[in-house]
Length: 333
Image 1 (spheres, one colour):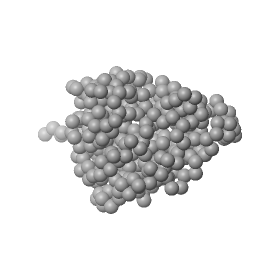
Image 2 (cartoon, helix red, strand yellow):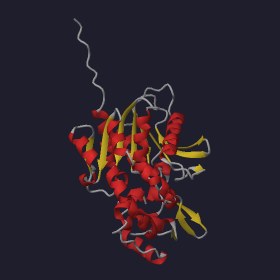
Image 3 (spheres, one colour):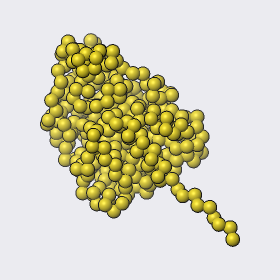
Image 4 (spheres, rainbow, N blue to C red):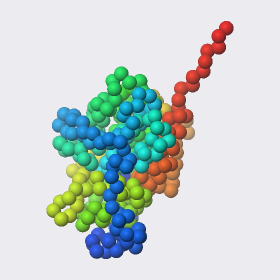
């Protein structure tokens, strides 16, 4: 489960049973059969899975449409504890809507199938990693428009990638369910949440079931795709790949100054939230001044891109189309 999810639910989430027999019984009751809790392959949602070596890590990257020479490039960054597969359904929908587009969704350092040194998850390190991934994936002579999309902690990374101006041309910046003020106010609750969630699962299906039962992910298809990438087999059990508590020293740095950075980036901006009550003062003022577009999807939980992938995909493509430069022909005298 994502770090932000823990912030918002640490005090009130009722954890589902973790006993294997009881979990299997619930799976059959809720979803008809345990077959409906089996993992889905990444290849149903992306065309390629690549490994990119950057300094001391080998990054796993999911992508589609890499052979296109025109159309926009949508680049994604997941939140803490997630993987690039959190955007699997969104990317598939975008490609169905805009076949000429390219989508790129890597696993961050210390997440998913990325390997190598993972101790440093500071904002500066994550931003530098992403810039190098982008440079490796995109032709340096390409003039295709880039739209950066980040969820939760990944939104902070993408805001700073955009602010660095080391990638171009950036046509838009999209943050999904991340607000500086709410994040910083909730940091104290995260250790309680981490202590309360299960430390391991009896099977991959049990992990998928837990994410659905806990409300971490409301979409079963997305859970079947993304959850297996979050856990690793440890003997007869399955434990979390990304241990969140060791990253505690970075939490403050991820979010401090995010609102100012987001508002000041000189490109079109979209903030997708599950509720307007999550806006902090700086964002509220900026939104009233028309400095960014705000889309609300209150039917979703924190992982909006997994709960409502088609709606998020449509919001992303419509945002790109809306911010295309006007091509007004010059009238000949």
